[in-house]
Length: 188
Image (cartoon, rainbow, N blue to C red; front, top):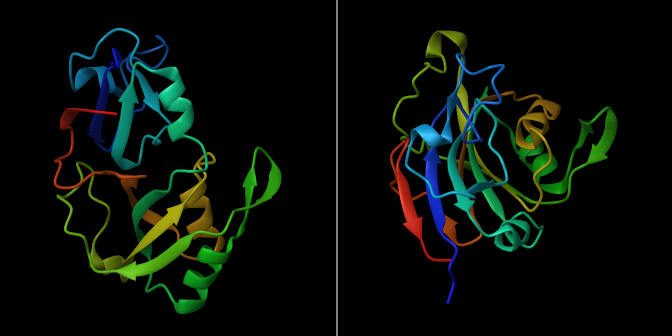
């Protein structure tokens, strides 16, 4: 019997992937603890940066957290990029691109990348931009690793900076129709 508790949330834009402030930035940011009354010992499995949205898993089980962040689980992101992305850029994203991690060149592992129609997410709190700034396109990127700001660095490396990033899947866990800020308790 699993005595641990597990949740999935749709992390809103502008929230940090932590539960309380460390004091210094308290007034400036929102925290996951504002979304729900989580049990003691809860931790985010992986992170989404301040500007990223979407599926975030939470658990009180450190072993489960370690397993989910391993490379055996795919992480899928829907990404709005600046410009009409071309086939060559998608091919490079799928094969792996060189990005900088902590000042070192790093070649991303092969993954999947494809064009997708606009997924129709609710508008973000802070508007992304409008069509006066030129076209944008949506892509799906699936990777098995999760380096710091990796997807953003990957799209920039192929000439299509990220405008909006939403994680939609971790392994078999799906964001589905969850609205921004929604919290659901789940079974492991």
